[in-house]
Length: 514
Image 1 (cartoon, one colour):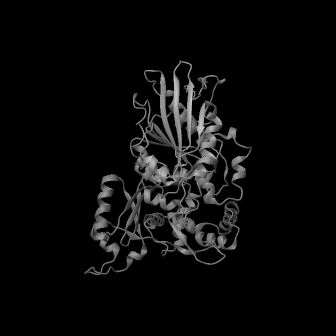
Image 2: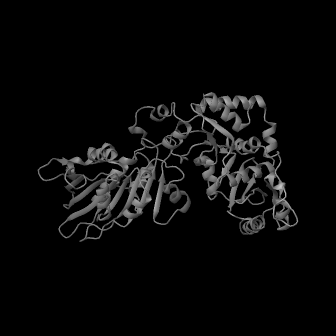
Image 3: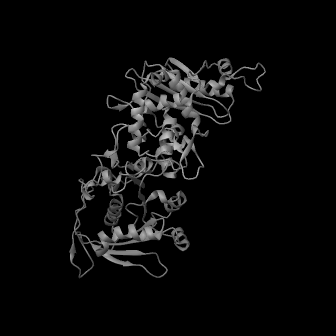
């Protein structure tokens, strides 16, 4: 592999066979970074058709070629290729591998052993590559047992999102154990995948835990859009398009649901679950970016109460952009204790910033049972140093959700008018779909409740809504021209394929359109 990412060294097949030359250049920078990565655990996430499986094959081939030879000039490696089922293994993984490298050895599929490609070929320096590519699927118990005793150099997981993390953990301790006579030049795990959902272990590791020793690469989506109200368009930054049919992504998006496009074509994480997302306009790669509080700009705080109180801390920049920088999420926490937690958090993370507003759920204006002085939540907060006020708007859900959705659909100087920091992990997952309307069980129709499900993700998201109302965004929403909003709703339905009456009603209810 040269610096340009081209696999250009010629190889010789077994004695007596014709000379075979290989030349390969990854069709995209992310694909090249994936193949060249030396990290012990490297994964790539990309849309359909982005060349991920092909790149994994070449990464495995590179590992075989670069293994240090033993005293006899033999470069020995054993790589295990993992897939979830045997139909997928034979239909995709084995097929793709053999299309490129079948001429370099013998493929055996029979007996009690897993399907294996035994490769043997010479390199120009006179050394010989002697490698095994062992193919295993996890729908056969005997092969799962064999995996536990495998001595391998490396492991390739094809379509990572279909594999349980317990398998990854086991593989982690089965690699680096072959060859025995020469230390493996490189050993580890690598894999390719389409975007998983936000409850998947891949998401937790890549976006939340970010452990050492792991590299998670993300390819550009095959489609993108200028803003949430614009249609999906082919992405000029997409990789591997040279090897795809003309208008592959444009045609692929036709007639597909919004969530399907996000996951399979736009390469966005999705939330798999029954329900209607509160914020279908949210696009994680657009709205979720790292940033810091801007000096000399006051902060606003939104609060949600109950037994799981939460807070969102953000800013409203002079150009009109809203930024949610911090979330404070608690469980089984009383008002006084929550006030103390919030005060310490503000002191540690927002020292020197003026607080312009602290706004909370208006339901907190009710007297709290168990308090000897019959104080409400806001009085209890004030007694503990947090001076908050009920958010305006009479707690109208349409108003407060639109106060967040409207900036999501707006662009300012080429950037979205709403940004969420990646450290707001619970809020982020809620915006990706975990904060949602419950689907009603009505035969032959798709209908949803007009109030969101109360869960772990609703609390910080609703705290953010109160932040927006308290900081004045609700007034902007109320000033919107009704006819313009109706036209926007019509365009939105056309772009998202919301052409059934029930879906249109759900959209209007969610956006406050009559």
